[in-house]
Amino acid sequence: MNVLVINAGSSSLKYQLFNMDNKAVLAKGLCERIGIDGRLTHTNPNKEEKYKADVPMKDHADAIRAVINILIDKEWGVIESMSEIDAVGHRVVHGGEYFADSVLINDEVIKAIEACVPLAPLHNTANLIGISACKDVMGENIPQVAVFDTAFHQTMPPEHYMYALPYEYYEKYKIRRYGFHGTSHKYVSQQASEMLGIPIENLRLVTCHLGNGSSIAAIKGGKSMDTSMGFTPLAGLPMGTRAGNIDPAIISFLCDHEHKEADEIIDILNKKSGMLGISGVSSDFRDLDTAIEEGNPRAKLAKDMFNLSVKKIIGSYIAEMGGVDAIVFTAGVGENDRSVRWDVCEHMEYLGIKIDPEKNKFRGRQMDISIDYARVRVLVIPTNEELVIAEDTERLVNEAK
Ligand code: AMP
Image (tube, rainbow, N blue to C red; front, side, top):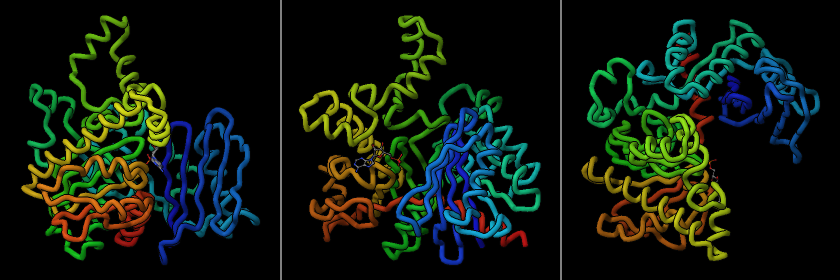
């Protein structure tokens, strides 16, 4: 079965075509500047160079057409015709309380995703546009599946997902912790179980998805028990440009003193805070490292704050689960930045956590980096959200047959 995985944003669309017989990525790419002019970057693994071209894309349907055209292109393509695409899997950011698993898309599912738009206005709207564009271009008969960032965390018990607000706000507006990056947390927890040779039902894991956006999850017996992002992906750790947890009273203080509306302050908390806001240098951890080497104290402060926040959350999750068997690092920073892994795990020997500095030098590949005798394993596991989307799509399509 060939599965096309689509991750639609407001002006961009990422795609990967999988052959599920061997889980190989046949091709992947990115449409950008949709609705502005349109740019396509396409990778065929059999070619050394990437295909890059300006392709007019007035909307997402044009972008999907451009994807299909390049996938069947004589020179750059990997399939003969559109009929070789058996199913489409969509990343959908918010499934609210409706979805605890991926689902085959039908009219009812579309309505539920629409009902979640107020919870993630930009993301879910873009995801819906991506779904309808695929339907328009590829027809009604091709099965489409939605895979939600929030679904994996639907196992959290109420004491972990409720905010201590008047209860009616939960009833009226469904204000609660949802958590995100669920597909990634699920994938790396399953990989960790395989790596350790221990059934997931018997494992207590802390999975650290540290990238441009970052979140941590406590996973007990394969189920998400707690996670650091909240009602929105703004909560939890300080991130590339996001503030993470702050005292909410700061928002009204800033509205008064900066003469701004609340949504302008939220925009600052989303786009100008975090590593960028503190360092004044960049949201990218590589740039922070360069600045730290040059002696920039604010870049060092930003990274120290990040590492401390990760450590604090790991500690609290170990307390919640009554112990931990493995800590997993994943995503851009978690997979590549050894100083983050080292600083986060430093002085945790009393919990049985100790990284081997030699093993920690490796990056970007699956690896156990703890010293041999450590009671708790520290694992680096490159995430693969697209593969999970493709696998869920294949499973649901087969179940429906
Ligand atoms: P992601 O959101 O998972 O794609 O992660 C992107 C982030 O990973 C970038 O913004 C960088 O801060 C970070 N990153 C990527 N490669 C490296 C690296 N080699 N060393 C440190 N940080 C990295």
